[in-house]
Image 1: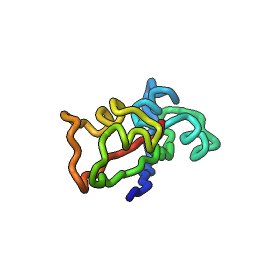
Image 2: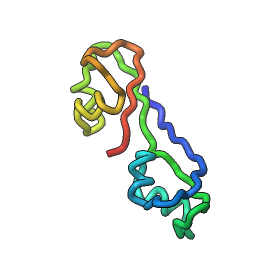
Image 3: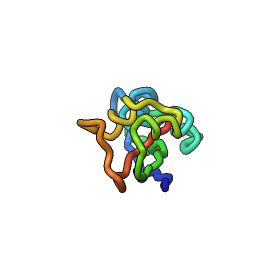
Image 4: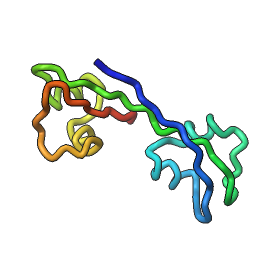
Length: 102
């Protein structure tokens, strides 16, 4: 079972903000920001609609491992571990694992 989830919110541009550091801060990419803000100027105080990259919430099934889940989504075990702050490689049936876009 998987669910596609996303979150959209408004962000006020602060001094020193760049498109690159906004993307890093909110784990999104330039195309998402530009698509949602076609008249983007990046002036201080401008309100920008940010759509955080979609992720898939994967519900762990019996016999699944991090490796098998990584293979399904064409990602790496290490990325799944990092994105989900997992301290160990053990998964539990029914556990929700977030799979973010590359």
